[in-house]
Amino acid sequence: MAAVILNPVRRLLGNWSRALLAACLAACLLLTACSSTQSLTGNYVDDTVAVADALIATVSLSADDPGRAEAETEARGLINDYMARYRPRTAVHGLASFTTMQTALNSLAGHYANYPNRPVPEALRDRVTKELQKAERGVVRGA
Image 1 (cartoon, one colour):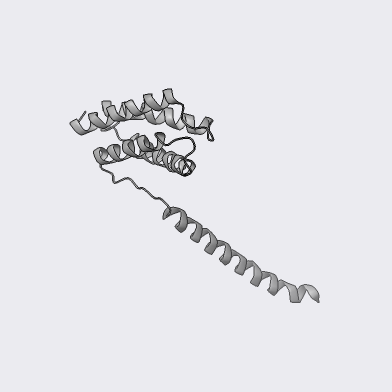
Image 2: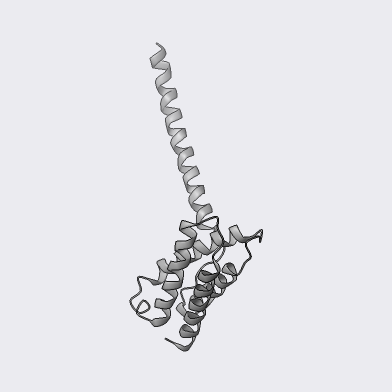
């Protein structure tokens, strides 16, 4: 007798929980899709200049800056977005500016991945800053 009463209740709860799960997943997807603070435009020159400027500002933050951790997290996302957008493009990945930019981004991403709680060392900061400035100059002149 109890099984006859509980089966429709189980079916009703099963459908309700699936609907609730689907609604939660949809909300999560919408929130993560809308959470990007800085997006790329799709214009290689503008994006390269913007990413280089943002990363130069991030690596120049002092070790005791209260916003450094958040800036580094945003920088990692920016590096990933930039490389995901431009690495597959055959018209871009052969340019000297992209090669220089890729070298700088790989170095910086490697530091952030291996030493997430440490500030960028001075030698790496100087090298990455020079490479980002070189890539920025190269992309502006069309190389």
